[in-house]
Image (cartoon, rainbow, N blue to C red; front, side):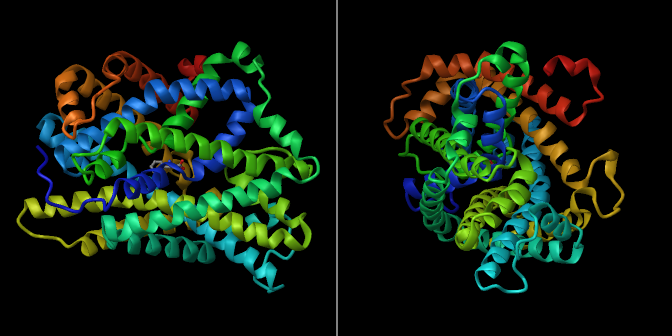
Length: 470
Ligand code: PHE
């Protein structure tokens, strides 16, 4: 039984808003559309969906299940299973702390861009004022003070929401923000798809191209796997933490399906908002920060009088996508702080726990913001810019490793009886038992091992023995 005496979600819908909010983030907007377009279009989507079903869904289900079973934080959950797994819990604690450092800095960029597009609306001096997207971006990231201020604002906003509590802060915010994001996304899609020349962008994303699958299948597989895994916010205790606030009467299986599906649908929709506009403006498709902060600003610059309106709308949308992810990250660590202080007999309040986590994140965020993707002359750890350095430990190593170990623990140690009991407590039959067990035991561990190697290879291309990964 759960030893849950902490916060709970107000409703299952509220939980879903928060969980989908965590999954939908920068990865959906700057990662998925370009990767899909560049790696086979519709064919890539099929590969992505297969991986999402066989690996993403079961790991999501496993994380929610462990969290709801224990009713504890990520560290407490693994400790409850066995002291020897505590290290996996601590990796789940560290990864969000590292990711937050750069995620908040990038979230600050979104705020800056929303603000600048608003400025254009009023012909203010703080607008973009028609400056080329690349120049505007370079000017911004090479102004450490300005980038740091926007990053700090983003950290503080994240902290305030999480300090409001699970149902009073995270759920309340997500329940308003996620529908708003959806509506804004629909508006931007309609505008983008009705621009002259937009069909080329849709063709880039969707037209099936078997060539990449034939020539570099392994690379397509590892690109899709890495994207799927990051996009679903797996392997770092988020879904364990969110699952710990879930009532025993909810179906974990059904919730996992809804989260995976919604995240994929929003990633596809993001592509329909972005790629048609890029092609209609005659620009080259791109991915990553280049797409978000340079190419797209050029798209809005080229839209004439309505450009700032759509620019503002779009960057607010990206801001929402980013902050609903960052609050889920901060919650993981706040929950660990609250729980470990309670264990030592000192009851740390939620507000104090959030403040401690936020101060650590703020320090990292200031370093990343001052570093400006390596353009400002700061010492570069291991030859990485600070953003990549933080990303490498978390997304590159600890997250895939954590998910790999988790699937092994569930598949080989806890077993079907344990899963069945937790899933069926509320009377929801575990319909996919056979499928899930094969995935937990064999497919997910193998898939995660492959994804782990792919991630390591992308961060350390000098490891030439991994060159077979593409
Ligand atoms: N899933 C988020 C995205 O797609 C990123 C994220 C990863 C958020 C891990 C939290 C944890 O951008």
